[in-house]
Length: 394
Ligand SMILES: C[S@@+](CC[C@H](N)C(=O)[O-])C[C@H]1O[C@@H](n2cnc3c(N)ncnc32)[C@H](O)[C@@H]1O
Image 1 (cartoon, protein in one colour):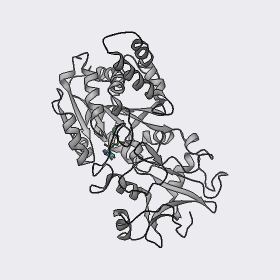
Image 2: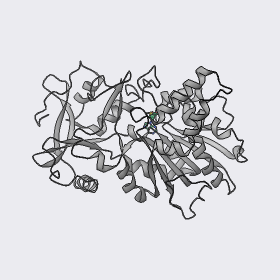
Image 3: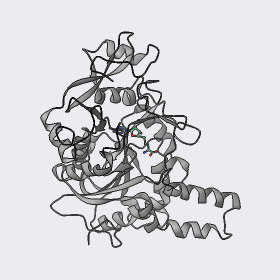
Image 4: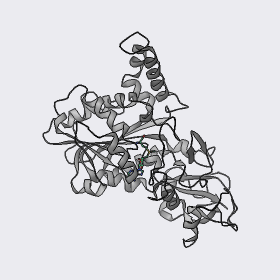
């Protein structure tokens, strides 16, 4: 990396090269990540190239089977019970629903006890990729509960009472890369080198508002002792997204589940290079500009940033907890114990279910996920569920 534009990632001419050639100079990675993921013609999600599951590019908790949704439904049901104390419609919104598997399995899990309010429930999916919307329509065809696809603007025009679930959405929001150059924080841009190949370039110093935000996350001007060249990323899209999500909900809760960590770990001096990764065929790489539009790109969520931005966006921060801690409260250990006894399931199914459960808490697989809970900051706060999870202050 140098301010002159040293080649970091080589590749043949591509739509990304053409896009950069047509741009007025090097571009922020915020724009480039948005192209790579969301471009309707070439983006990994936008064009529908994403492949979920063990036979695809990466495994998510919903893509490995219904077990995750069954446990999550135990968290959501009491929240909907509490909201149902007041009359009127209830809405379960999923933002960024991928293949639609989570919503399909959630509604099966929520409906299993036939709650009295089930006929007041509607499902809403918020999906930016038309290609993925088409997959979701297939997955959810024949749903007993009415399903709608809405834009954030449509929801904001008619805000709902209910829950928003965002599973592995926030890690796909575009991030800004930055690094220390001669003792100052500079943005890292994507430009073209002498051979017209995409490369990283050091851009201008970060804007004062960004420097202020980074300082609140523990990254002071001058770098706080970090060496020159040290780099990371942050998510400028998070604040606007929290505001957008809040505008969609008149009353209720937002549950975001994602790869995450607090700022003290995210921006630890030892974590040089940040958390951004590209993922394809179950392999991760830091070569973010290779195979444009054919790899997933993901950056961890900074839980401290969500907490800091929550109030200004109209949310009350309720807390964050590791997935394993929450799933244990929701009965994961009992599920595993029950599977060791002969029961209605065949042995092969019991073993498969047991493996799915263990993967959800294995720190090397899906156990590094965090659950982040926010409550709408409305004039009439939602009634708390009768059995609150541990992160809800009493
Ligand atoms: C990593 S996938 C997660 C899919 C699914 N939730 C899962 O966990 O299997 C990210 C999903 O969010 C969608 N997405 C990304 N940015 C979005 C945005 N701003 N608004 C709505 N959907 C978005 C993608 O198209 C995709 O469906």
